[in-house]
Image (cartoon, rainbow, N blue to C red; front, side, top):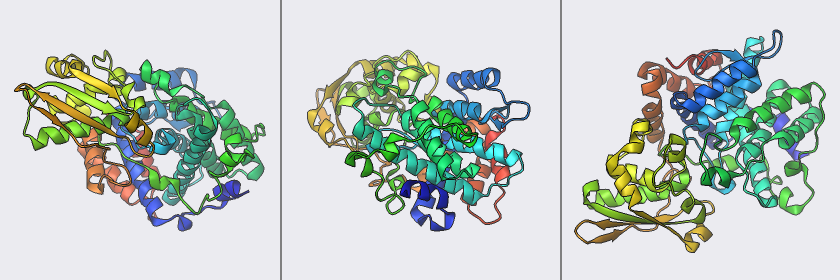
Length: 450
């Protein structure tokens, strides 16, 4: 079957240049998000939980926690790493699959690689990129198949698990039969968690990758031991709806549809944030000029609401409040993701004076892009309205390499220091060199942040 042949035979040499570039970009971007994520309460809790409840066996596999250094089981490292990255909603994604691959795939792959390296198997930088490419591509396609065949809107953890298991099976050297079982185990054990529940009631649960990533890791190890679980129906389903997502695997890359975030909040809010930003710049306004605002957007975004978030988790899944931050602070970076921002009187004034309108038109067209427009009502009685807006970072309007680098340093420098951040970026730029030392990169991203 094409699916299994793709995973077992794909080589770095056959990866298209644009796919290699995207994976390297995602590697840098996601590590930067993980660095600032390591400062969150969510990350601290899950890392400590992994140490207390998911420790490594005396003779079993082990891996280091992301930006922490302590050793736990690979499953624990993947769990805590995924929660750490997902604790700051700034990582890459794909609009059509309505979620994110990197936040689950990267920590899962790093857990496998760290364990293999520590047990004496040398993994090259090119093998790392190939495993990530497999993980992303299989995760995206599994997610597309799931969304097309399931009525409920499941979190990214439901399908990233399949991508993690695919990448892990490749790194572990499983054969086709064991690979099939790894896929089936991952799909069956992955959390079919309800995305809109976390939108309506924001909490530390986030996008499900915190359990999706370790589900994928455990699936590969269990299959290696002989545990059975095939088939994965999002892969081997006989219906035409499922099959259509796999027929061109290896010929066309869903990875090419990866988008990148300019702001560390839910991407559904980015259209409104950027529309407001453009109006503020065009008309040379300050927040004092604004009396009230209106956002017209697609249905899912309208449910973000969040006029008075009480926690940073609620801020992440808010709409009015992040736009108000942009209007008042003129940026949304790591320094804006602090508890004090929740109590800023000017941000609260703008946020509470924001009307959110659910637009049927924007709901209809917000499939591979996310649309909104913003109206600013000024203190002098004037009204100014933006054009329909979709956020930068989509493949049609990508962030430049310079912008990705700037974002990486904006998020990581305050946490790990500029020197270490610069070295990580240099190492990632060289990751596909034939003599690349992967262990040095692992040391940089797995050692404690401070």
